[in-house]
Length: 208
Ligand code: FE
Image 1 (cartoon, rainbow, N blue to C red):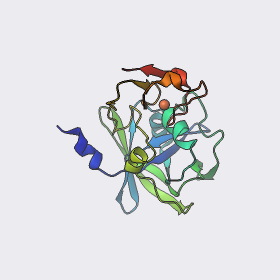
Image 2: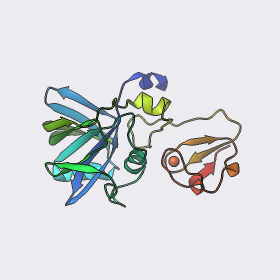
Image 3: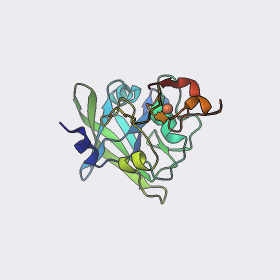
């Protein structure tokens, strides 16, 4: 099996939001597609807090991120858990049908869950679209753009996760997001933060 072939599937980068009781929560999801004229399918890992909250509330929203999305969105929604923090605390949102939508997005859809399929690792939710709107005039971010241009990586819970390997002689891995720093990290100032998840230098481990 050549895992490289899987990189040729196309995906976007989205924030899926839902509610935990009264509190909004959500996470980055890349495996989302429109499957019929009024239905989308999304895939969320069992370990993501958002998964349980979608099952409990029966609803979710998808905010479509653009290439110019503010740099706080992916670190907060991709690499932190809604179990620990309210991810929406310092984020500009609009509320549609009780769900928080990222204002800094290309557009959104709001869905009611109509069906679920549990695989060994992920739940695939089918959502009937209740409402949708365009917000910002930006180019939607593809997952390929996120990797190639933004130098982004995937958390272990992403369906598309693949371990990053480095050919550099010396390298460090961010234990939060998996980003690989190539070279001598000790030469960076103490104020250095991971470019992907914005965690401090102390979360890096030397891998070679
Ligand atoms: Fe990181």
